[in-house]
Amino acid sequence: MKIIAGNWKMNGTKQNLEKMIQDLSNVETNNKIILCVPFTMLCTESGKIGLGAQDISMHTHGAYTGEISAQMVAATGAKYVIIGHSECRQYHGDTNSTVRAKAELAIANGLIPIICVGETMDEKQAGKTMEIIESGVRESVPSDISTPIIIAYEPRWAIGAGLTPTSTEIADAHTLIANTLTDMGLDGTPILYGASVKGTNAAEIMSIPNVGGVLVGGASLKSDDFIPIITSVN
Ligand code: 13P
Image 1 (cartoon, rainbow, N blue to C red):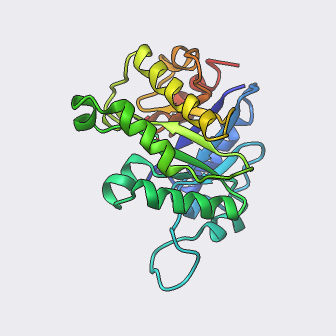
Image 2: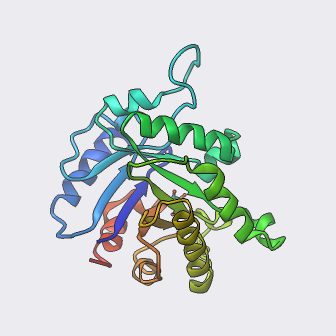
Image 3: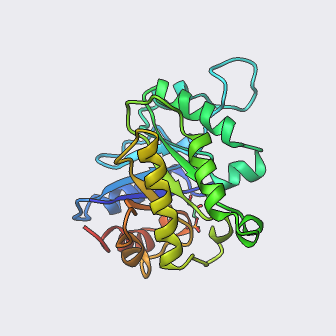
C-alpha cells in the first residue's frame, strides 16, 4: 500500500474535482488516495478519497485577513493539510519554525500534516542537500506527537521542472529522513517523494527503499495522467 497524494495548487474548480472523484471511483487499488485542493473545494463529497488543504494559518483565529485556520479546514471534513510546501516557503516566507507551528495546529485540530522538506538548486550546488533535509525534518516536525504525520521530500529545484533526482539521490534522501525520524521517535512515518512524478516514472520511484508514496503536482490534475500513477503500484 502506497500513499498517492495530489497537490492541485491554484488550479481547477469544484466541477473538476467532482469529475476527478467520479473517475477515481472506478479505479481498483489498495493505495491511499489523497487530493489536496484549494480551500473553496474542501466541502466536496469525496467517498474514499481523502481531501486535504494546501496550507493553514500559523494563528488560531483573529485579525488575519485572508487566512484560513486549521480548525476551519478540519470543520470542512478535510483530513490532511500540506505544510511547508516549497511554494509557501518561497512566496509566503514559511520557515522551518513557522512550518512546525502550523503542523502543531494541524495536529491539535485532528488533521494529518503532510510536512514538506527539500533543497533548492543553490543549496544542492553548494553540497548542502543532506544538511538541509536533516535540519528541515528536525526543525519542522513537532516533537512528542502520538498521532500520524506524513513527510514529503520535494527537491525544490525539480518541482514543475520535468527534472527528477537520480534513484540514488532519492534513496539517500529518504534513508536520511527515515533515520532522522527514527531518532525522533517517529519510526514508520510515511515518507513521500514529490517533484515531476508521472505515470512513466512513478513505479520506479516507489520501488526505492523508504519511499512510501508520491506527492504529485501537475500530473494530478487530469485523471488520464493521475490514474496511471495510482495503478503503477499496489
Ligand atoms: P510537480 O509534480 O508538478 O513537479 O509538482 C510537485 C509538487 O510540488 C507537489 O507538491
